[in-house]
Image (cartoon, each protein chain N blue to C red):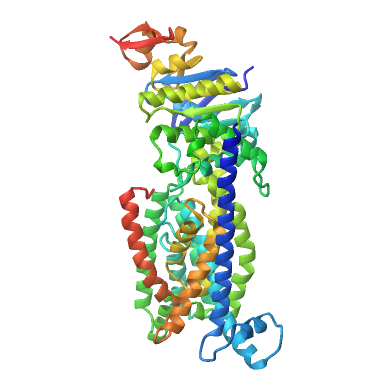
Length: 257
Length: 345
């Protein structure tokens, strides 16, 4: 049994169900990508897995317990999420922002401890943002800024980390850099990582497992080589294409026909 | 993790806490000095020593005690308490709604208090403690109305502010209507209340604020941890384990009570709540948002404004006139620069 799993999960906004009756197991210690066309419910699923949306039906289980029965701060010690567009206060410095990731580990009267200090330092080092520690966030480039946000999520020190479209506003170089970073984090510390991604080629290249969604349902799931086929891309994205092998890694590449 | 990173972090953190300690101490000393100074000046001048001895009941001197404890301490105490409350409340509002314009002056809370107080004065011939009670009730009702109008699936800063401006304009229009129905003496009394003055506080009104402050200010400071998470947006705050609606309701209730009590005691003294937070942030460093420092800044601003209004002007003026004259240009500057950076929301 995996640590994070959803059973019969139905999620939605207002009176519209976006995800309905979905079962999913998030593989422990792997990097998983959730892919699909716009508005297929992939971000909704991620938000549901991170208890940001209350299930209409079904449940999300964390370590065998329904999340709705756990205190939110206990969930936050195990499961982190970087949302699509986090907000930073005006002029906040990198060190200050990353430190705020320690929130779930602090109590009403518990002061900042050596453990907090080390977690923040580890997060800065892992993301290569230690040199930026005293700089204001708004002065950084998009790529640097995204790495700082990842550092904030890392400072939370969770075994599972979910990211909602972490590469969307980055150029190709920074996209690759960020995905490499996620994979390194996974390989070195065994963290389970789930990211909503748009680029199928990059998802295939850097992730162990792909979940393809359409209309709020999971259409296919498995290793990139098994999942990314011309048939699936046609079905999920409505795009006619040819799949070729990545000359470097041998993973599938989608070429529009 | 590398030792170098730990060191860098340790240094930045220490520098920050030293700066916070120094700024807060200096502000506290400044407020204490202004507090004493307020009681020294007037038609009967006293030395700092005389004031301190009398306030602390160290020695008995009937003449000095009458002037200090009887006449000046209530005004100085009101200035101090109202300033602390406005400063703390303003910065909580601004951080909660992520907008420097979101002070309680502008989101309808103060206007609600004004409408209730003026209505009480004009229609019910209220005076003294009753006006205070109406103002308190008005502020709380206005805040509740805002909460109901703006709260749909949580709140976004801009939505709250726009609705707040609308509600404030509506209440201000009603205040104008009520004034136009008033008899001359009542209208005068209402106008005086509306300008806002720490001198108008009676001892019984002030006592309520003085009892509430030692509870509300520490609560606000304790809740700051949640404020720092909420500042990152609802999704991030929730992912970090904040109970967002509960934390926000607690913060908002504390801030509304603080501003409502301040307005009930001294009338709507404008701009102090708007300015205190940003000034404190300038002193502490960006995005630090210290509530204690903002409260002290509010007290320093209000005591200074009252000193200017009462002693430096040819004729004594209500405090609100001075804060308005200084605050309005600041507001214009804020509007101009916020718009340019496009960082208003």
